[in-house]
Amino acid sequence: MVKIFNHYVSKLVSALLLVEIFVLILSLYAAHDLLVAYGIPVRPLDAGFFASASAYALVTALSMAAFGLYHLDGKPTASMTAMRLVPAAGLGFAISAVFLHMLPELYADMRVLSLATICSGLAMLVLRSLVFRTFELSFLESRVIFVGEGALAKECSSLAVDTIFPKKYNVVGFVPVRTEETAVSPSALLPDGESLFSIAKKHDVREIVVSAQNRRGGSFPLHELLECKLNGIKVTGAAAFIEREARQIRVDSLYPSWLIYGDGFNQSALRTLIKRAFDLVVSLMIFTVSLPVMLLTAVCIWLEDRGPVIYRQERVGKNGKSFYVLKFRSMRSDAEKGGKPQWAQANDDRTTRVGRIIRKLRIDELPQIINVLRGEMSFVGPRPERPYFVQQLSEQIPYYNVRHTIKPGITGFAQVRYQYGSSVEDAVQKLQYDLYYVKNHGLFLDLMILVETLQVVLFAKGSR
Image 1 (cartoon, one colour):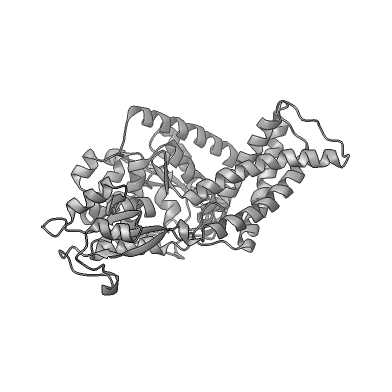
Image 2 (image 1 turned 30 degrees about the vertical axis):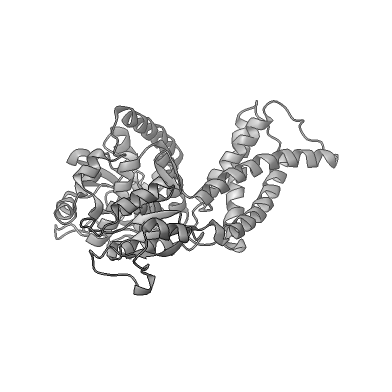
């Protein structure tokens, strides 16, 4: 992982993105030269060609991201890659063609752009095949030792080996500290009698993860860990390891001192100003583009049962202040006739026919743009919850109210990383993503979430 503006990004994804942007730029030059070589009359190169090539590359890369080509859950096959690359390249071509024609100073020749799209698509299929094969090589794996043998050590090791592709870690074993019940396989325990540094050096270990829950007592190798760090071996705490690999902050690893003295959780005036500017720009753009869709949705909702189009519901916002969120009504008007709030369920029978469609496509959330323009919400942030559930969850989940230190959002990190929540257990998992966002939020992470939201909408992930 590499950390970019406080957000952890896969090294593979980072390298792939940079190389593919270069390939996309190069393809435009290659397409031009190829057409000229075959005597086909095209517009000659000019000063605006590099700017045009760069714009085409960025638009196509964003289209690829929206189709999930930079979200690697498992090793993609050539056919899986092609199925997403073809529509992504087509979308990139269409947007680039419109954009380049709108600005006369840029280079816009459809024959060059068409050939570049074909050439870059084929080149990226070959490139990805080679890159994925390279990242399978074992010498790229980082050898790691876990200090501890309890439940936390088992969880961290599972996280290290659960990544299907690319495999990043080779777990050497566990150094027992004898202060907790053993939860890992006894065969994975490293033998006593050697110093931690000797074990790490013998096994060519690059990182040691301190995953012992009880760090007190004479058996905890504090001085040995210091020796390892001073000799160039990375020493990482379990909470930091989980944050890096799962992009979550564990609720049970949070302490007031960590919130106060640790990095992140920055709520500076500058960050707030940048976030507000981002909210206004993105909201106005999406409102303008989606206005015809919203008008059509309003007509369909009214025609189905002649009920109200907009649904107003009380939610908890920043600093615990309540406001009314606006949504297109997707359930029957008597969905909560008993008066008691209910979790939304999979295949909820209270949902109308139009409601099922607009929920699937997330169109029901669009009226919340008005909440953003009013300043009650941000475009990206933890999803706002109802007061009834907030009170319930605050009593059961430690630090639940930390998510209320920033404005709630239309979309959020938990929404693109976790399925729709309908229980306290789901709320815990989503909170751990929300805490990661509250700790590390910034313009870069907001843009990443916005791109991932497009993927969620395109493939109807997590909707109910």
